[in-house]
Length: 113
Length: 114
Image 1 (cartoon, one colour):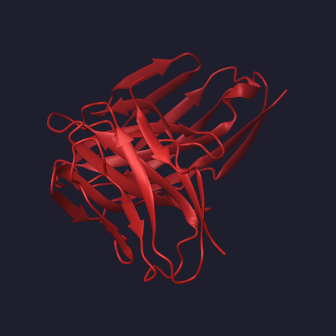
Image 2: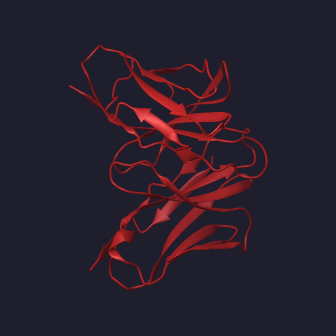
Image 3: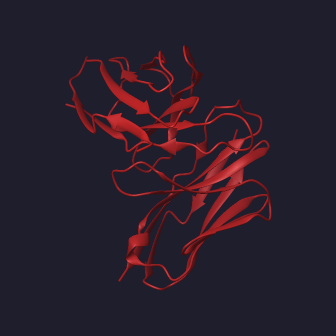
C-alpha cells in the first residue's frame, strides 16, 4: 500500500527564517511526486512534479528535491504570503493511467511578520 | 479562462436527501476525479473517470455515485447512504499517458448536513 507521511504537521517561522518541509513516501514504483499549496477554503494549487531521485525544481522562494525515500520542500527567506498548507502526493507506476494520487496530511506553515 | 469550475461553493443537505455537486472543466483533459478532504486527513479518492461513459471506484466510493456523459463534466451525487457526508469536496482533472500526470484541482465545494 502506498503511503505518504509529511512532517512537521505544523511549522511557525519568522519572516525571512528559512526551513524545510519533509515528505517521506513508500510506493511500489514512483511515477511522480507532487507538491501542492492549499490556502484555507480553496483547492490545492500545483507547485512541482518530481520524477526521479536527484531531481530538483525551483519556483521563487521554493525548491523541491527528491531522493528514493523522501522529498523536501525548502523555503528560503519566506514571506507572510507563503503561509499555507503544503501537500505532498505520490503516483505509483503500478497504478492505472488515472487512478489518482496518494496524499499526505500536509504541513500547515505560518510565516509571522 | 481555462480551468475547473465547481458549484455550488456551499451546500446544505438534510438527512435523507441526495445532493449533486457539479464539476465542469474546459482544459480538454481526459481524466477527471473526485476527492474528499476532512480536517486533519489527507485527500481521499472517491471516483475517477478516464473516458466518457466509464468510471471507477476510488478508496471511499460507498454512498456516492457519478456519471460521465460528456468529456467536460463529471457530477458527483452524495446519496443518503453516505453516513458522514459533511466535508470539503474537490474535483480535479488531468491528461493521460506519459510520466506522472499532473492533477489540477477546482476550488472545492463545502457540503454540510443539517
